[in-house]
Image (cartoon, rainbow, N blue to C red):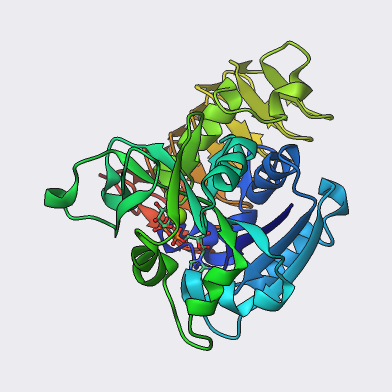
Length: 366
Ligand code: GDD
Ligand code: MG
């Protein structure tokens, strides 16, 4: 089976994490995000994948290469400018087989694609969307379904008065290549807004899936994905490395403080005396946590240095960030690569600092 992964979006909602690294290869727990997708696709018989890139394309290619590390043959198409989801599929047409699985490149899921493909064959659909129930459909593509699983209506980013079901497009669909005949070449096309609605009553079906599903495209959801992987709430190979313990500890780590699992700690990490790391935290390689610091439910990426008595709660700290002593980094804060904070800065309420921003001691207090 062949897959096409859409990976050309700018990942604006995940900035500044995606200012230097494209969203598909943003590190999640211990690997580039898209590795989780490749692992999932491979379990359902995908051995060939085309990655549709735009923004920071070389970043994706450099990290994933020819796919041999993942057991899936990878090829890349690179758009000269963003063509939208439909335009991107059209642009890749010459590489596609008669039937292809199309995936949004930002979903962490263990949906049963094998079942979805079987339903697609049974109904003779042109396109079968995986559907998932969510609490608030407004950020997604809402799908109204008939009793025979055909789609009655597709509404991308519905307004509150349009929401009468919790089923949304999960960003994984089986597509017959003939659908592409109806997509114009060379211009920006949203498959959700311009193509799905035209297939209603004309070959568009939905597969109601159960299982884990999360679009990782915001800081809150990125952290949620991290916690769910550590909890084993989504089927991945991460816990395989735990050997029955709840903490994965890299080599060359020094833990003098307390480390409460589940947690993932990379190679060369130091946790100094009196520090507490808890609440499903991920520490990348060569991270240093200072004496008395408290890191809770956070992600601290490679090479970051956290000063003494600094606290980080449910926040994302980019690679190489340096935090001085007694800083407070609160919920939803995202610090871009190379940010330097002097001592006693307090960041709260989802503040975001762009790569290499530097603040002197005590510059921000909430
Ligand atoms: N190659 C390419 N070119 N890829 C693109 C482009 C483009 O111009 N625009 C977006 N993409 C990729 C993104 O990188 C992402 O992987 C995927 O297409 C979906 O784009 P998002 O920007 O993440 O869309 P969304 O999350 O708002 O909504 C989509 O996903 C929801 C599920 O998470 C829609 O498909 C919704 O219907 C769906 O419910
Ligand atoms: Mg998305």
